Length: 572
Image 1 (tube, rainbow, N blue to C red):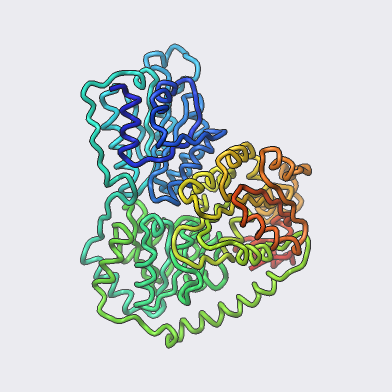
Image 2: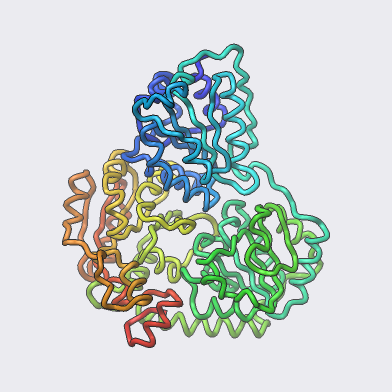
């Protein structure tokens, strides 16, 4: 069997339905065979980095590994997306074709040493030097990608190997690894009992859920355990959706990217902090100050990765295992009944403070000012978006306000962020992947004008693939996040250094790519524009004018402290 045909048979056997990528001369042998497999759709991207972000969005919303491919000349373009997937533990198989390896040292056009490029940003990079090894390599890639701490695996396919024949190819599949988690290891039994005992005797416990809860699909177990012990539950920005945020035990997002004074104080005042599927990074802990590394709280840390458990804080109980399976065993080991949440004084006090804070937010959300206040946008979005939607959100103003103030009513993966690396240019391509994973969902893709410049060409992809994908561009005429960062770290006189853009007609650009486009200049237009766009079975583009972050300061703890001292408007 031809190696490229064997590859298609393997992908078919692992239930792969979509592969995101770009054509290139080194991949032509593969494409020739692909022509006979219409059930595996090749989704053409306009940039190799975008193809990886598409696979990222697909993986997060389908609970299957994302598959992407690129030619040798585009391998370097894929690295930003692969690095994000690696840091964010996104299950992914990344294929790159290449020149014949025996020509590597003869300066053949498009050849570069791919193994070294991908080695630091993948779980493993494998070069197929003999076509007969291709089936074993693909099985290994799916197995590694979906088990343990998930992540991307890179397979390098020289063009001559793709054209070779395989005698008696071994095409058996390991179907456990066609989805994730491939397997669910459970933490050590005595450690489980120790953690249960600590929760049962704690006076001020708190649970903080990271993205690992979503990968494990452990949100039901989190809610059950929290209700048994009456424990408030916060999430990191990437873990948003691990707990329904309208639940009385939810305190929302914690840390520096979405945390509030209330949620962060609950963590700081806790006597037991239970981290679940959380890597305790700088964003989720505000550079390890929420709580501080000298905290007197006892730490329980459950994670699939042995590298992350106890990595940032002294840890009383280390639980290494899958979140869903391990929490299930903890619930089985519990002998008490769920507490009456109304009778617990601590929870009553938290609810009262949350209601007071909610009144402050409600007042701001009715603002009639122009440009549109971000909380007015959150209010109108909440009222307009249909059930079963997915938000795909770029870093910056769109991320910080949705993280803090948009309430996820139903647990599960309905909001996608890229806050592992946090590079610009994520949301538009990731929304394409989400569109194929959840074709019946309304997609709301939130993008800054700075981020838009990285992936504007993918509007053609969005238009071509169709579907209810609504791109909302926040236009503050600048790299607004950097304006605020330099203002509050170096001084306001530096805010305009290489951060401002000239005026751009964004709706005209979108219309040129075939999208129905809107410009919202004031709050009175916002609600009906969103409802109209969300009701269409086609992609749309909405430009929303907003203030830069150094003028209206978003809820970033270190910035808020500076803004208060300087008397600058802020939301906190």
